[in-house]
Every structure is written in structure tokens, then in C-alpha cells.
Length: 283
Image (tube, rainbow, N blue to C red; front, side):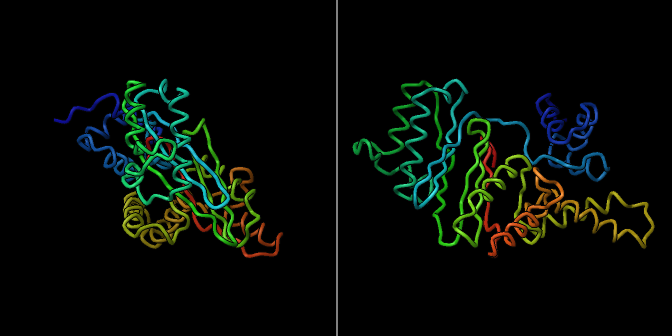
């Protein structure tokens, strides 16, 4: 028999908002599989808006660096928040994103092997190791990303909770729409979209949502079941897809409508071409 721990119950409760007793029952039935427990709860109509992740499990920060030609990001983890707030750790992280902006590495692995520009006798990884020794905690460069600035595009960043959540948005169609991009980046920090549009949702995800919707309408009249299922799928897209979401600052507009409105105001065809949302310890 799988041991259902309080931590597992808490994560399920954090992600679904369902009471402790029901969470424990669902986990017991699913033999400790949290994703299966969520799926079963949704099929039973008990869980609706489910958070993709539970509470943060790693300490760390996400640093950014913007130059005239690109924007760099790096997530660096440590064992305690005490070290994350340490001045030496903060200096280390900021130096990393400056290195990423100037050298354009293709992966974390490649980046760690590079010479450190402020001390050519050290690689980036050796520089990291010296910090591990001085601070007494393991430090991990978890992920990096570089976004080049393109012609007729606007990039903007938003950092929330002291670098615990960082979002980025690219607007295609103008080089002067950083303000719009930042507004949408702030929205993304709050609303956590998983996809840009319904067209980008993988078919396996759509089929999973369809299966859950079917389980919820078993006892409905046959002639309206399909309509109900399609309605539930639209509701899922409205929750999971950025362009379908209602803008947090003006719920009368979806993000798609917000961008369309701005397009008419400036006389240019604007579109959200990509976005990113990083949470410390998240995907």
C-alpha cells in the first residue's frame, strides 16, 4: 500500500483547492499518483481550475540582462533563501546573465565550459565551484535563455517577487510596443498561461480534456452532450491559452482583443509571437 504523506496531500490541495479529506481519498485511490488523482477529481467534477504546479520546491532566483541586441535570462538555485539573498550570490547571478548576453551559449552545458571573462583562468563552472566553497551550499545553474532583438519586434520583461517569477513577451509588427509587451508580461505572471493559442495545444492534451468532459456529462441527454463537451473545451482554452485569457487589468478584453485594439490605434498589424514564464523551481 502506498504511503500518502502530508506533503502529498498539501500539494494536491494547493493545486486543486479541494479539502484535505477528499485530497487524501483521491491520492489513496490513485496510489499516490498526484496527476492521476487530479484527473479523477476533475472527472468527478470536483476540481476545475487546476494549477500546473504546487508550491515552490527550490530556492533560487531568475536574473535578467538587457542589451541593445538581446535579453538574457538565467535561473540559479541554492539550498536556502539565506544564500540566495547573499551579496556574493547575487553578484554571481548577475555576472552570468551578462556573460550569456555577450557570448550567446546554446546550452547550460556549453555555457559552464566557457572561460569566465573576468578571470580567464576559470571556466564558468569553476567560478561556480569557488562560490560553493565560500558559501557552503550547492549552487546550480538550472537553465539559461537568450532572446535576440529582431527587426519589427518589441521585447519586454517583467520580474515579480524579487526574481521568483520572470516573464517575457515578444510583439511582432513594431519596434515601439515595449509598453504593450510589458503589460501582457505582467498579465502572464498573474495568469500562468501554458500555450499561446488553442492551435498550439497538443492533440494529446485536447483528447485528455475531452475525456474528462465526457466523464462529467455521462447522464445528460445524448443530443446535448457534444455541445456541452465543446463548451468545456472552449472553457479550457480560455483558461490555458494566453490569447483567449481575459486581460487582468480589463476583463472586458481578451489578450487577443487587447492586441487588436492597439493595432487599430497605431495603424499596424501587431501580434504576440512568443512568450515565456519562468518560476523558480518550475518547468
